[in-house]
Image (cartoon, rainbow, N blue to C red; front, top):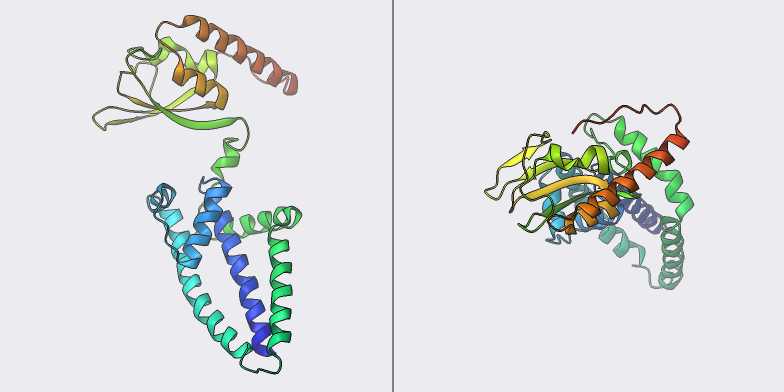
Length: 258
């Protein structure tokens, strides 16, 4: 019976470790869905070679998290197999122990899928990780409201698009449309971070921008000379500012420079 109890504890701890890994990866900017998949993949040693997996290896904080999950996964696998063999060695109590294990696993699975339990556990995990010197992580999804109507997107610039050949300052993207250009990647591979209003967007560039998802989609498809779309975007942004002022009347009304 002690072996069965040990096996249940190991399974519970494994689910907790995967959950901690998921929260740690979301705090580096990954979406919850991608973080959950990559956490489980690293812990189980499945090693899926996806674009998301390549993104993880590019950041030190994500590599540390995945490395921890892989190490704990190797230890947990060996311990689980050993406990499983010992638990069902006795043919007399084998079926009863199997039934107990199945019931407990279903209960643990239901608990892991429980929204209220995750809402209760996630802040505790975040607090614990934020206090650790090894995990200097930030929840960029929450900071930038990426889980709501805002997003970070990139789009390629063609010659027949509205932004092609124009200075950022002349486009008035930030001040008039509420779109902030975070970076420009030139066709030759040169990257310009936090470009000023003096930088010009050329055909063949890759533009990385932050703003409302609907606005970024429209901007990426806006054709050359379509100033009517620009004016419509300005009006939509003005309405958004009016709503925000209603919520926060003390918001300053000073103009935003490009």
